[in-house]
Structure formats: structure tokens, C-alpha cells
Image (tube, rainbow, N blue to C red; front, side, top):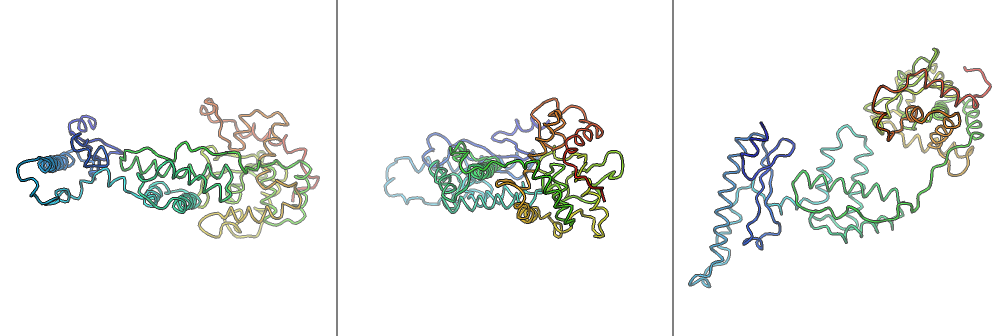
Length: 406
């Protein structure tokens, strides 16, 4: 029904249920405009309201264009006329805005628009990243209307990022943010322009440091130190060391996520919370826990700390302080692991440890919350907990420290 209504209203199209007016500039008046088409939002999803606005807009434009054509006629005495008399363009209704005006949205305004619609339910890092990238671009090329940015601005921005010492992966993230912001503004405002920041070349490998897995010998030593010190920071390290969880996932756990610790298949439920989002959809999962991860989980539950959080130290505000956890834990960890290793190295190591016991890759992906390229993974409910537990137990058995669980 909607399609029939839309087709019956000439010079309109719909986006997200809302009507937009769209009319091409006549060829003989093209030099009067800097854009080939007038496009504007009508601010309604009602066909009857849109039809009335379009009729008024067409009448105004026809009258205005007729006036333009008359002023260009060379009749007797045309040299005595007052230039721009009446300023007919100013007589247009406020809601009828040319594409030129739509495209005049600046980079800062485009960024604000993007965050207004896209940041809901996202972590503060999402907002901070978009704002930081926008600031980089404005510092390099000024805050200009989107249709005033050129390919040379895009290359200047790339060079600006390189001069700041950003690695190839960081440049990738910044360009991705800029492209997302501009593409959203183009789509939202029906702007007819090509994004000059798409397809910019740069060395993606420049400055990229490959994250190293932590050797088995170092993991054993770290876990022994965690047992000896036996505090909440060491519990967090031990938990990550024998699960391969992302640090943010572990730091944002609730005690209610530690399940069946004294049962047949102890496990952790990783799920999304208001204080800690998850990286991907596949990140929500059940992780079987054995070895030092089980020891750490029991110590958390046995703790006298009266909090619903597993690690209240890093959950004192609205958002889990994963960056603070990373800084503090990596500083301590550095004395026991080779150069280039960090907390994230436990995640790399866990994948290697599961490979070493010939764990099927689909089970590895399920345990680690890694997205799989397999179409078949989308079918069914995945492996049951008893199956994943048996593989995790095999992967951690050689690292169990011969000490009774407390």
C-alpha cells in the first residue's frame, strides 16, 4: 500500500518511512545552482500531508523558475532593470531547502548527527572514538561543509594521521569512522555527492605490533604468583589465563555469571550488561572453566566483598573500567612474560592450547566467542556444555598447579 501511495506523489521518495521532496534543476537554469537536484525532507510520513507540501513546493519552484527565465530575457530596456530585484530565491518557504543547503552540513554537525542516532546503547569508547577522529580531521583540514571536502583533503588527513605516529591499524579505524560518519550524513540528508575519503591508500602494516601468545612456562609462573598473592587483581588474571576471555569481558562479570562452580560442569555466562557491552554477537556464550580459572572463580564467590560484581574494583562507575584494569594488570604481568606479551596474549595462548589438543575449530570459536566464517555455524544451538567442558579440561590439564583448590 505504501509503495502505491509513494508512486502517486510525484517528485517524492521515502526513506525510513519519511517523505522527501526531490526535483531536478531544469537544464536552462543549471548555471544558477551548484547542485543538479533540489532535495529536502518533508518531515512527515503521512501521504496526504506530503502531497500538500509537494504541491506547494512545485508551485513555488515553477513561479520562481519562471521569474528567473523572465529576468534572462533580453527585451527592450532590459539594461535599465534593477539587478536581483525582489530576490525571488528568498521568497521560498523555509521547508524548501536546496540540496546545496543540505550538503552544507559541516563535519562537526555530521559527527553530532551520527552519534545522536548511532551511539544509543553503545559504550563510551564508541562516542570517544568518533569525536577523536572528527577532531583529527578538523585539525588537518578544517571544519567544512561535506561537499567542500576533496580527495586532496582525504590525502592530507591520511598524512596527518601518519605524522601523528598512528599505526596502520589505527589509521584504518580512523578512516572507518570518518567514512561511516560521512556516509550516514549523505544517506540521512539525501545528499548527492561521492565520499572523497573512501578507498584512501596507506600502509596497513606500518607500525603494527603483532600480539604474541604467552608461552606455557610463563603462564605456569604467572598462575603460581597469582596463587601466592591471592587478591582480586590476581583472581582476574588467573580467570583470563585459563579461559582466554577478553579482559573487558572478565572485568565486567557479575557474580551471578559464575555458575555451577562445585558441580559437574563449572562455567561462566558471558552476556551483555549496561555497564559492559560485548564486542560481537558471538561473544555472548558459556565458557567452561577448569584449572586456575576455577580456582579464581571460587575465590571470588568466597570473598567477603559485598558486591554483585565479580570485580567491584573496576565497576565503581556506570561503565566497567577495562582500560584501568588493562594498565594495572599489564604493568604487573610484564615482569613474568616475554617482551611483546600482554593480558591479551592469554587469549592467543588459549587458542593455541585448544589446537594442541586437536579441538575442532568450531568448538574453539564457540569457547572463545570468535566469529566464524562458516555459514553452517548459524544453524542449530552449538555444542552442549558437557562437550565444550571436556575440551577445555584437556587444554588446561597440563597447566594445573599441584595445589588443592581453596
